[in-house]
Length: 426
Image 1 (cartoon, rainbow, N blue to C red):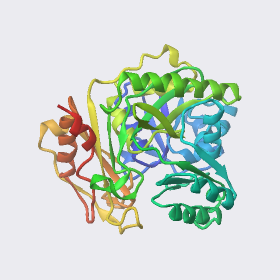
Image 2 (cartoon, rainbow, N blue to C red):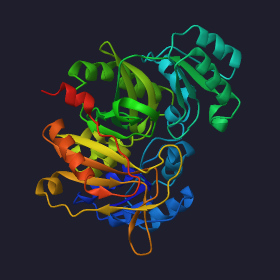
Image 3 (spheres, rainbow, N blue to C red):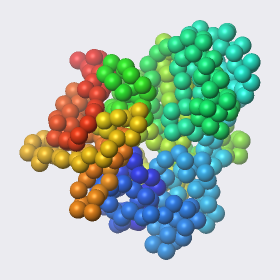
Image 4 (cartoon, rainbow, N blue to C red):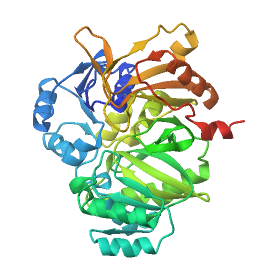
């Protein structure tokens, strides 16, 4: 099987790493890939969707997997499907679940999926009135795609009103913020739940927990994610049951009823409040860095999971996961997330611990190769050190031991990834 992966981050590298171990996979292509993904397959510099479809036909590629949300919202799946090419991901219409927060919130309301009280508006006066009715903190969201940065959690009503004004004026997020959602803040603990869907059937992956804040103890600015772990012990069978009955099944039935059956990854941002799962948001792709922890836990060949979902035949797949834990620690560049940093050469010590060699690995993201094939940190989130273990404590130890083997000027990482789970573990 020949496979094309769309994207360039750690998420796409992790999918490629899982496929590299799959004996049924012959060749992997990345478009555009990163400086390290060329070690797993071949990077191609094609961005036009129609030309990518031409490439897929010319190279007899059996499956295309779309990593980031941008191409999905822009309709790459529609173009490939029109040419009878097998592709994993939702159509542009279905991708509105992430492409428009207003569409998503209204969809949840139409199908009685539990979510926070909200208003969607382009009126500053209506937004102010709703803000005045809420307790602080207050959540303000830009409607469109903002690279994961279009959400403000305001500590005061004045701050919420300033955020509204900045978004609606176009100053904060351009056209993505000219319509907004204002919603009540939910106080609980957050989960990332990923569901592989084929339009009819679905498979729920082990629940993960992401760490968004830059600094230890969840301090500092929000980022794209500084680490994650899976599965989390904060989820029990009762929460999974409620998610299936109250969230996943109504959503898939609702999408089908509205003429846009959902195929691909449904990423559910969940807040658990007093044992009840409330939906914060939907995304239509794997989270990053959660994907980096989920892929090594997959026991079933990765090609089977993605291909069966893409052709609408998940029912015949036997999807299994290892009874293990994964912890991933993001190593970021010096000035992340404030601004771009100078490129810095990455030096990785020889791994002399057999335990680390066998149970830890690096997923590369913001990296590039120079003309001498030296690896450089050139992005914000540079790489993820992933540890696997029979316990979260063991996985945590291995991930951080691997972090100690990686060096580049200005590197930064949190030292408390998975602290919630480690506090619970006996």
